[in-house]
Each structure stands twice: as structure tokens, then as C-alpha cells.
Length: 354
Image 1 (spheres, rainbow, N blue to C red):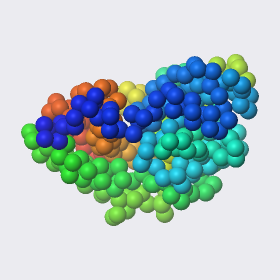
Image 2: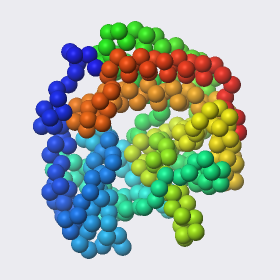
Image 3: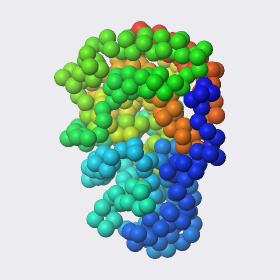
Image 4: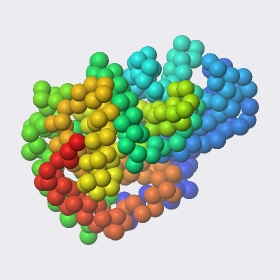
């Protein structure tokens, strides 16, 4: 990041960021406030956007002695938006879709303590799925189809949609206005962004205002961030085994293919095979609109831009400079420009097929 926009050191920011107040005692006090008492064993789990802890309880709650407590990032979502996420997870659980959601405690799923909103969920074990296995991909596709069937039952009212504006134009404008890019990298990166955004805007499934055309394709409640790290796989020989979806924190409205493409990797031939297995499983449950396959590269491009904007917007959190020390350097931004040029070619290529 340029010197005049570079934040102070992580140590200095630590005293300013809201999460600086979130100490182990705060976590245990928050739980005690809703009648749950930890036995002193508390472990921070990997999470950048929120703060998440695994806590051992003295007495089990609803059959769970170990719970996961999530403290939502202050200012990111409104209470109404968080509750819509919780309602979505409740809809999934009611339909027996294996998604991990918050427990209802004292009649609520969302609680407040010392300026933090938090929820408590059961701990779910598992590992990332082996996505080079066609059978695993088919199984995952079936469960994604079930998730989407529930997602299509009713819309989000207050959570945002995924579209060209929210993930593209707003991200670019925020980065440029924040003077985040080094002088030698800004021009080429800006030009590359304008090229890819113009190409996406010309897509037949994108409306002039940047929204996906809901008259041509169905827009539904999505997981929104369905990468392999948000799927926990448990042994299939155990009852209830297979994939379990976690972390609906990025749930939003969009096309179903958003929850499929992040599970693809490798070269084009490998991605076509993986996509074929996913959709084979998906269509064992419901039909998949193959017109959406043409949105994979636009969605991949938007996520690339949005990711940089997300890092910049979180730079005052001391966790980010420590874990992403390369962000903001000239090398980083020139690398992003190169990736955007690659995506420009991908946007012009034929869509992946299944």
C-alpha cells in the first residue's frame, strides 16, 4: 500500500480495533450471560472476517458439550441481515439439509454482549472433501441442489445481492477512492478492471444496472461462499455422513452456479470433468439451468476484484497485516493486473461444459 495510505502498525491498530476488546474473559462472560458456562477450555478457530471460538462447557446445552461461538464483525451486517442468515439456516435444517446453524437459546439465535453480536452453534467435525473424487462431487452436487431448493422457496429481503455493482464496480471505486494502489500499478490495474467489467456488462444475462437478469435465470438464496473450506466431510459409513455446509455468513441472492464454480480447480479439462460430476449429482434432485454456465468466468472475475477490496477494507484489523503481509505491494497489484488479463481471455472463451 502507498506510504501515505498505509495504516499504522498492527500493534498500534490493535488498541483501536473493536476486536481488541474481545478477550477470553469476554467470550466466557458472553456465554455466562445466556446461561452457558465454559470450563476454561477455549480455542480460537481460523476465521478472518469474524472471531470464532470453540468452547468446552461445564454442562451440555441441547446435547452439546462443545460449542462454537461466533462474534460478528461490528458494522458489517445489520441485526436484520444476520437474522435472515439464521432464518435461512433454520429453513435448511427443517428440510434436513446438512447445514450447521445457530442454536436457539433463551428464545433467540442472536445475542448481544459488550457491543458484540454473537451466536452459538454446535461443533461439527469433519475434513475438506476430496474433490478429485467423482463420487464425492456427485454427493456434494446432490446436497447443493437440496440447499438451492430451499433457497428458492422465498427471497432474502435485506441481505444484499451478488451482481456486477456490488462485487465489481463498488469494489473498484472503493479501492481507487481509498488510494490503496501504488502509483506505478494503479493505471494498468484500473484499465484491466474497466475492460473486464465492460465485458461482463455486455453479457446477455446481465441487465444495464449490473443485476443478473432474474427474468431469464432464477435468482435464489445462496450459500454464497461455497469453497471447499466451508464444506465438512464426515465418513460415509457413519450415519449422517457425507458433506455438511458451514458458515452462511456470506449468504446472499444470486444465480445457483455461484455455489458450484468455487469447487472447481485445475485446467479446463479437469474443471469440465468436475463440473460434470457436480451437475450429475445436482440433477438427481432438480434440474440445473445450463445457461448459467456462461456466468462462471464473470463470477470468478468479480470475486477476484472483490477479494482485493475486502482485504483493503479490513486493513485496520491487526489480523490482516499479519496474515496478508504481501497485500498492497506493487508486486501484488501487478500480479492482479496479470490475472485480470487472463480473465479477459477466459471471458471471451467458450463456457465450461458439463
